[in-house]
Length: 374
Image (tube, rainbow, N blue to C red; front, side, top):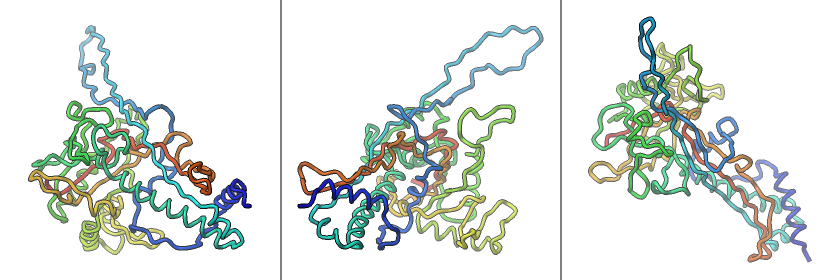
């Protein structure tokens, strides 16, 4: 009679030593840009009951002024600090085997390994698809603490009728149709420096390139030389992941930039065109920031001023040094050994669990969204 605990140990040993390139899996989408940033370089780990960061959103208290000799001063002690507060959210996936399947395949080395790898690979593929939806999306409502804060949350669309560029992104459009201006515990309608940068475009042309470049300049904040940056946001635009667009806009931008390019060499304005990477792949860039295809944007929708649901054709720049995935210490893709279940006594299940959310460090420096008019 097979011992389920012994089979569990065999399963655990096999999972720890799974081979590579054992079989193929047909993915649902060609690119996983959000999953691409979920690596050690971009993930921040911390403890606590929630993710909290301090930020100063108003420092105009009249303390700096010209003066005369022997002038007396009135001390001013401002209360300038605001708190970014992001709740932890929980994510998991599981994969199971029945003891009968394991017994049937235990004498077939390849069949046994394939059985284990198949279940795990299918679970991870589902997890990747869910992460993409969550990472680029928005919670159901302002009171939703189950879904994480995605890019539609931190980079809202401009209000209906807005046609000018600037830090005016304040109204979050949640999945259930409600709206709100409180982002990570801070009300953007009260603190103007908590509003994100937005702009409106109508077609892919030279004007859009100028708008993108202007947005890059407007969101690239630098402290004066005599003052150290008190936070942990570098003073340069992170071009590792760059600009995200849907397939249609990607094709139009590639065509436009290819016509403007000069055989792969950078122009005098800093890299508008198409460059070839070390791997031999042609990548469209604007100011050295690569433009990346994001499948989520193919079906991205928003309700416009006329009440119609449209694809806004977003051009979204995310600077991951200022806006990053954050995980609870030791709780990112925490994988358990195969465990038996009381209700399913012949079943062994492994669980992969994460406690995480996405946190913004400085909304003005985190990037920008340019989209069609609403």
